[in-house]
Length: 115
Length: 110
Image 1 (spheres, chains in turn purple, red):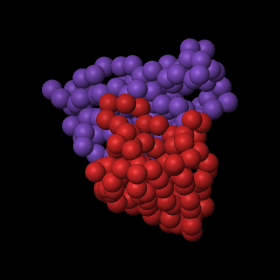
Image 2: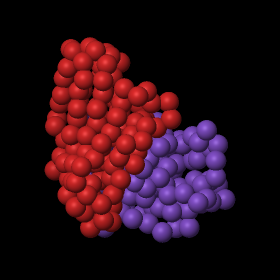
Image 3: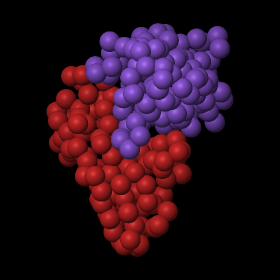
Image 4: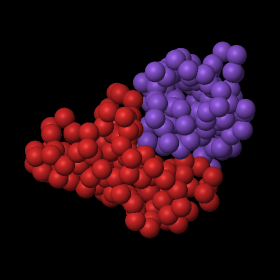
């Protein structure tokens, strides 16, 4: 069974860069798309973007200027970087397998943007 | 504002049936498969329906999906208190080249 686990700082300062990593176990990262989704407090799910194991990406147009995704097949991990964060980026961030069908999800990690 | 439109909330009594709608456009629902997810706060979203009508592994046949033109519907019969959750539709938007979700619907089983 594929399992995903997000990791990274739970607190990020305004204007800084949010960095998260998703570790994949129980299966190879190869030959799949991998996505990031977030949920701000009290709001719905927002698709951030996805990356293919080969490195090609699709990003949410509203976040595209600030988002970078990467993949490390040797570590079976993929990562998210979101720069110039504000309080509006405070959310639970989920990693998931697929695009846009998401059958496997991580448990999510809360990232708070605050000084 | 979400690209896909869902009602904010629906409710019904235990044992009854409820439907949740998801409205979009030709660039998303009209030309792409729709998925449905159940989400409880603090947990990972769970895939219920994919490819418009197919149930994910382990999902009982109380859950069903349908699609017509630019709208999709999730149906739940034999409602149980354990079905209370937030439900989201999702698909690909070919114009945006991005995944999109509905705003979510909170199901209350009275």
